[in-house]
Length: 324
Image: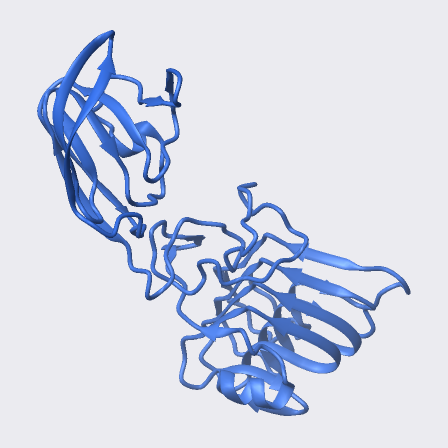
């Protein structure tokens, strides 16, 4: 945009609130590529601004990115700002501040009360700040926590976004965003994917791993025709096609009485699969400590009314497999 005005610039803004009302903002990608090419110097640039006396505003599971290019505001640049007697709650959000200015903040408290926890912060410039509280800029998360008594369960991390203006998280990422949230009354994400009881932080519920739980990778070779397999890793895609894309049969599991077709496989259970040729697959995911030993045993299986024998190898922390 080009403007000679000096007003504030807001993505979402409120001037005041009616008594007894509650504003809930959740599951949004907000911010991104905003360019000001005019001669006017804005008084402020706020992605979300709660002015004056809003009685209750709750921000849950948002990804808010301050990417502003233009004349520096005379007052402030913020991801979220509130003031007056506003009552604000911020949980499970990602706040990214990419404006490298001394008057740039992820969170700006100009008054009122607030509760903030389980948020992820990232500030890219050396001059920018995590927050503003009680009339003072708080450059680091520790300074913000010490002065406000909030965000004890929050952290600093550069989010592994897909890229550009796509604020989805790259699947398989190792990040504290994974399962880093606290339960709030939001049961789905921006794509209407169901959230877990310990949800991911931000608008996107994704399949990832927390640091210290780096996924294992197991590659297994299969022979032509029938194999019996068991998966020890919880992969992002536990479907038969996702785990074994070269299989030419359904996955059959014996439930104690009969063989049944299973489209989604479970860790530790054995399944029959058929392959048209020798092949292999790679499975990525956290290992399950199911078996504390290595064993070799001769086992008997009833398949298509015929008895067949095979040496089944069960390897510690590995995929079971045997070909027929």
